[in-house]
Length: 128
Image (cartoon, rainbow, N blue to C red):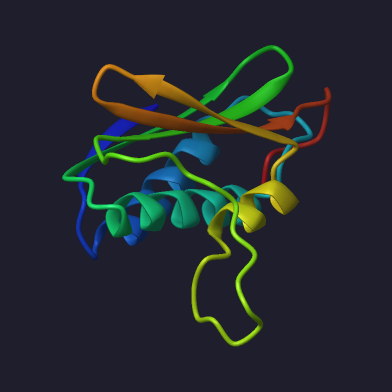
């Protein structure tokens, strides 16, 4: 499932609502906790908005072995993990992605970039 959002202060909440619906539509499997995927999408969309993007694309898909979240934007620049001071109110988004997702990477697009995060699927159970 995929959606395109205007990159404004409402985008992170809209992305979380989209991900909640997309997770419910995934095939049954043991995979990521829904809260983890929603946290990651919120951080990535917030990063895109703060970087000056005008549009953000969000896609959630299941492959044979993974749940993959793609967040694309048209902002200039490249995301980098920061190590902010303990009292810095921001700068932890990619560190959170690193901690919560099994894997993540960034891909250059013709206009902007795509940050992908993935979680391993195992047969059985349910995606919550």
